[in-house]
Length: 586
Image 1 (cartoon, rainbow, N blue to C red):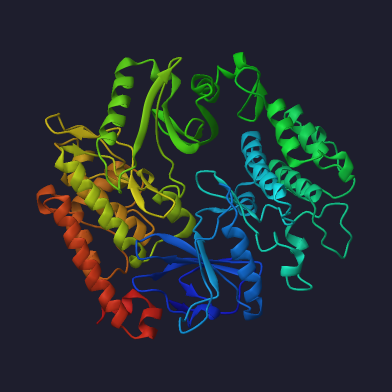
Image 2 (cartoon, one colour):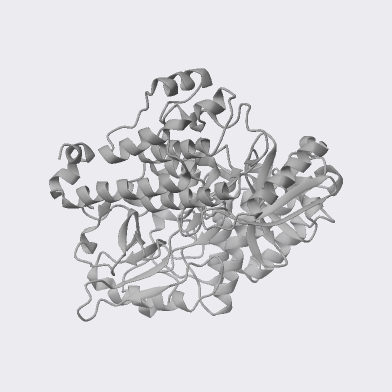
């Protein structure tokens, strides 16, 4: 780990740095420091990887005087049970001979704050805002039911995962005032201040929490926080906002607390009434539509077909033949991903058969590195299947968001991918479209293979142009016969992408890519020699010159990683600081 400087501003992310206050800590055997860390208000959140390979968040305090404050926070979180509250897994007191603590462990959350997302993407549409209100509103209602308040709801304390699941953070403030050090309060520069609060005092109430919830929704909808006084009519500043939603926000943002909803639960009931159900009205693509109008849209057709079995939360992505949605299974009370065919494709019976076959192929493969399929169904001309929701998004999103990943973080997931492929190949299934977008990341940051849409089963014809050019083997781009070696190539290309941040043979025109492939001109950057050699073997243009199968490739990867990380551990610290080029010279 690199040497770090003084604490960074709240919200700042660090990569590969060990904060000063953690340098003397000793993790349990078989645990290691992760690559990411984030600063919050009076808190630091460091990724750690436990002995089972799961990424967890270690919450600690840079100021040793705040140990009791942190202990109280961990205790309160340990007794809270809500799907949008990251509860405490374990607490390290720092007492005795153990050189770690105080700090507590909780779930590691992929993604970013809503405020950071706003800074990158600007304002969001109505469905996103309604989902935020429902999720964070239910969290506040749960907190209020226990006689507590939050007091710091803002775009900087609402966290969104790549799959658009929301979490409420800032729990260092949701404690009895006597457990918070004297003179400390949330940073007013990072949130909207309710109009009833005195200029020099922090006085959270259930009514002020409601106002801050609505202010956060207002900010997401319009791109800026609302004023505490002289609030303009929402229809005036946001004409596209549905009238019912505008009325809910306007009442919750009333300057007089007595004029707001009497509880957040009442706000949520009114929100459900004006947004409606499939029998009255639907929010579709930012508009409140009647059922007849909604059924002319893809989202509306999906909502209508799912009825009362699933609640559609948000769209996660789309491709040529279908789209993927985040939905809630109302029977089992869990969130899942739902893949549906586009309406214009669903009318083709052959396409529907291929789609069902995709679900069946993936459903046959029970392995930790393969996304599990839950169910298949169709209704009202809509065909879909449900699968595990990957809360960490895809590898493509991870690299785009955080850049290339260190070898230590990539080692175990790549081995798991190859193990999963070995299982698939063992029953005659070849994926044929491995790419970063099809490698999803679960809540513990494990990588999982998805999308068997162009997979081939043993005995079927295996030729024709398939795959995505940047990650497809030459024989795929040239339309030649294809065997398991195309998947071995795909894992090699994905591994190179994750380690370097770019496809090994560039992007763009497939003819340009295949020319570089056949010439062996892979751009692998300054990687350790044993890793570069493994990649060259995996990316060989001739499939006969690649690894014989996924299991052999996995074993070779394990040996290469052991060699590379062993050299790194034994290198002087200043050479590790300089980078892998210094290590390569040894």
